[in-house]
Each structure stands twice: as structure tokens, then as C-alpha cells.
Length: 84
Image (cartoon, rainbow, N blue to C red):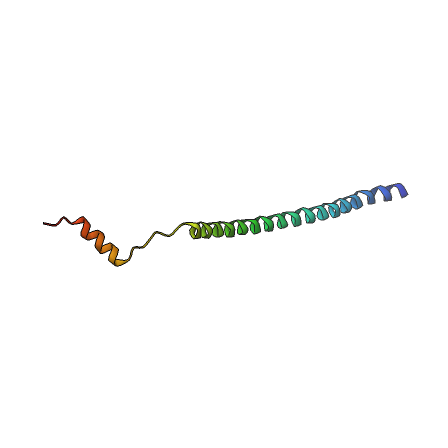
């Protein structure tokens, strides 16, 4: 009778242990997945900020076009018109 009782308990205990191990493994895999997703999101935000900074640097490094004073513009205009 003792053998029947032991073998009858063995299967439910094995199922409980297997379920507990499965839940622990699922917890760590799920946690790693969430952390990876968070890191990806942070890296994407960092990339966006770097793109903005690069655009600002390019804008600042481009030379500004020369703006002629109004007198020079008028002189240039007079030179273009032929005198009669």
C-alpha cells in the first residue's frame, strides 16, 4: 500500500515543481524582454537627439551669405542700366 501512495504523490509533486520552475524562468525571460525594450526605446530617443544636434551643428557651421548694404545694391543696379 505504501508503494501506491508514494507513486501517486510523485506525479503531482513533479508537476508542481515543473510549474514553479517554468514560472521562475518565464519571470526572468519576461523581465529581460521588458528591459531590452526599454533600452531600445532609450537608444532611439538618444539617436533622435543626436540627429537634432547634428542638424544644429551643420546649420551653425554653414557660412552666412553676405548681405550687401543698400548703397551697394543701388550702385549695382545703376551699373546694369545702360545710360543714353
